[in-house]
Amino acid sequence: MKLKQDSAIRLSATRMIRCTSALAVVAPLALAEPPLAQPSTADQRQPAQMQPAQTQAAQTQPAPTESAQTQAAQTASAQTQLAIADASVDLGILLDGVEQQCRYNDLLERFWRNLSEPEKALGVLNQELLGAIGDIQVTDEADFRMYSIPVRGTWRQVPVSQIQFGLGKGNGIHVLLVEFAAPPQQARVVFEPLVTRSKLAMSEDPDNTLDATTDLVIDGGKARLICDLST
Image (cartoon, rainbow, N blue to C red):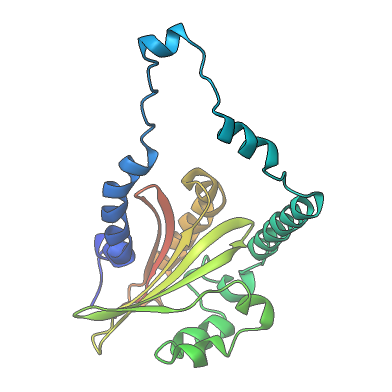
């Protein structure tokens, strides 16, 4: 069963659509800037007077201590360094080969074959990769299961946000999607030439009896590299 390109995009969009729908309601409220209050005529005539109790409270309220400020700065710095460290993890050890005719290296092969048991799948990864990969989320659809793996790292120096596998229920569906966290143009500059060469090689490969296909798709402001290995 061969998935068309739009089917593959729908697989990756399954969870995003729900999130986007919620944000469409919440975001305008969260981002709307409240109107500036207009001073009344009385306020314009007389300057505001601070009441005695307010004056006393303002005078007695302790200022943040230097140690508290230092601790907050250290915490923020540690969080920033952690984010940078996570983002610097090279995902090539897991993904290298996908950009070349959708070839899975040994690690990726072992990883996806164990996805039905997420803990076992994570067990094939080294400590560096484990630090860059979040919990595996499984979405059960009628004809396939979508395994969504949030990641924080780079592939060929392009930030990646998610890896997804759409695996069929005995019907031959097999789709891999790599979603980039970088702006689409950044992903396109690096991966479009690779994908173009890969597509040409796959179309001319006499051993590609499954008609496997690959593409770099820009959809919903996200760039995704897709490998459709469905039978």
